[in-house]
Length: 312
Image (cartoon, rainbow, N blue to C red):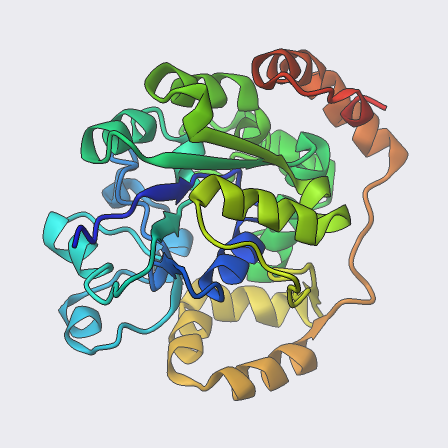
């Protein structure tokens, strides 16, 4: 039996890939990599250039990780050897759909070509989110992780003006929402019937129908019910200064690896709040929309979907 992945959820970041990945992982005919985002095919992402803060808060799967079976569920890593990548799929049994979900694959300039070489018949799932709300959600994540304490537009401008840019080097708030060229790379390497484009609002508003569309695309059985859990929901630290200090030291990441999920949930409730999460303002929306409007129009033409509601 071929245990190579035959489908890839490639992004976009902050568009619902974690939610979709967890739903797929619960399907009996689907196998999802224990490392949800192995980022194996983003070979143009240079780990050695990662900023210290990002590096300290990133899990790098080592020999110890791969020596313990079954492999522990991990959100993100950067796998760079064929042996380790193949090990992620050794526990495949009779699942029909085998996949992984790395959001860097949409941003990467080489991932589409690399996936095509590895698995010519691969199926590609792309989830797109209004780039304005995607950028703001990305900013809220940066607040939560302690990467920034700046106001939204101030943080955006700082990141836009950075000379040294890249995944793990800068935030890429704007760049990750410039979908048109990113999507073109996949249409350049895969036939249209091998690519499924979903909109984030479809996942939120027509959940079961949209998930069954994914099931059809992957040739697995449809389902009658889905557990409507949402993942990576926004929250912000109650003690921002303390949160940044712990994050920058790398202590937060170390503790997260050691404690149980139950205890982790208790700590999150103690240190983070969902009630005080900032809301994007009208002026902030208008500012970003001026930047994104041409690309939204281009993206609409490429995918053949009406995205006018993103422009309002």
